[in-house]
Image (cartoon, rainbow, N blue to C red):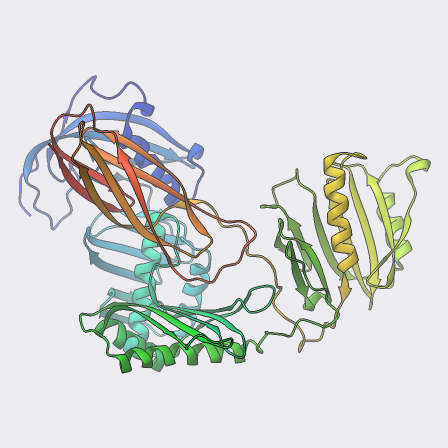
Amino acid sequence: PGATIPDATITPNTAPASEADNPAARNQRQVLAQQLQLDLSEVDITEVEAVTWGDQCLGVPNPVELCAAAETPGYRITLTANGDTYVYHTNEDGSLVRLADVPEAQIGATVIEWTGSDDSGCNSALFGPDGVAIGRCYAQLLTVPFGMPSRRADLADFAATFAPFTADTAAGAVTFNGAGSTAATPAQQRMIAEWARLAQLEAQGGRSGASWGLALAWHREGGIAGFCDDLTVYVTDEAWATTCRGATPQDLGHFRLDAEQLATLYEWVDTFASFEYNQSDPAAADSMTVKLIFSGAGAQRATADEQAAIVDFAQTLYGAATTAAGDALGETPATCASPATDQRLLVQAEQGYCLLYPATHTVTETAPGSTAIVVDSIMNHVDPRVAVVVEAANGRTVDEVAAAALADYSLPADMNNPQPATVGGEPAVMLDNLPGQDLNRRLFVIHDEQLYSFFFAPIGDAETAVRIQAEALYNTVVDSFHFVATSAADAETPVSAAPESDTGEAAVEAVDMRILESFPVQVQAVVSGQLPDACAFVESSEVTVAANAFYVSMTVARQPNMRCAQVLTPFEQVIPLETAELPAGDYSVQAGNVKTVFTLP
């Protein structure tokens, strides 16, 4: 405080001719698009102005910061998105960025105020029902959506449960403005701070990852019972139980630890260093393997007995989850067909049916009582798909339903030709080659006063590849369709392939440099981190260079139509850097939020 901040000097005609030539602007545009969860085309670079800042704070100091006076070449970058303007100050290579001007934060009534520090310095976040405001401490805050849609529901649940409090925790300082009556225990206060820290990281990156906030991951496989079970527990108090036993993997539930369990977990996390536990029975037909990955923040090495206690803790949590879920293992109705290796089983017990569908497709719940089986995405209108809608028949017959559907089409008499069919042992009516955006087929059947409507599209013209694919989908679904009991006791979560995961940037944890003794000198960046599960993979990598800085961008994709337990999978990628024509000197390499330096001889 009290320091003299020199004025910035605008240096004319030194900015690149277009934003495409300015890596700092391109990088900040991509960051903002990710944070606002917008397509890159929805964020525009409206101005890039070359500036020589008069201090190392890039002309944007905070009230408690003393900035060293030093000329710092850089840029004033102006971006626009959704009609709002965002101004950033950067240094020349874009490795230092400060938010200079931003729309006023609009998150609704603030429920959580959080501050915490990491290697990058002091960070702050406000959480309200309408979003998150994030930024550096004592600086302007950027309003962004929640990094995960479920965070809004979490916040509402916290606000309705806990009474207000203020606390300093291992996860940061938090002021909680709840409306509930429950006094949060110290462990629950820390849980809310841990949640805020993780939600702030998600908002900063515009995404999440299965490894973020992970406390432990437990896996059990084999044994006489044929176990194949997984449990993941996070420092945010969340736990997920899944099983891969049987033909189709299942989620058994998402639940929260109680206050006592949470306190025990935090004691272990704070005390013990990270470790991996692996126990296997002697080789035999019924041998069992138990694995556990523990992410600790302490320095003490856990003894064998302490590791076993943590394993027992995880196994107890998993047992409680399977009990709460009614131990869904083996409860698939006996009438349902068994899937082949290239098929999946869908059980919609609440809607009264089960069916098989191709493994190339995924299942999406589009509305209550409405299920779409599509390739990759419901926006895919090229590959044949089917929608199944269940609603009350309201006294109608299947013929009346079909006639009403036909009335919506102005068809010539020779095309008005309902065809009898059988679905699940019940008489049905099929309407074929109906006009629309694409040729489509509709099928209607009534069972127990419920109307089941099927919509297949596109079906293509006769003898085309699309028609062949559509007929295969139709036969698979209709031939395997069975009605099942719809009582509450029998209702289950639909069993299906996992939804498609979006492609995103890799979660990088370390960057190591290799300088090979060769001529010319070869430089490699060894980038490592964690993938969210065994289905994810590094899809591509790209390197851009600005001044003395290399920026490595790595994208991760997930295999479609597969379900995987949330067990972290480490990755390592060797990225060659083009240095043959560069002068000797110091260079930086940044991948994700990890930055390192190397000296080129």
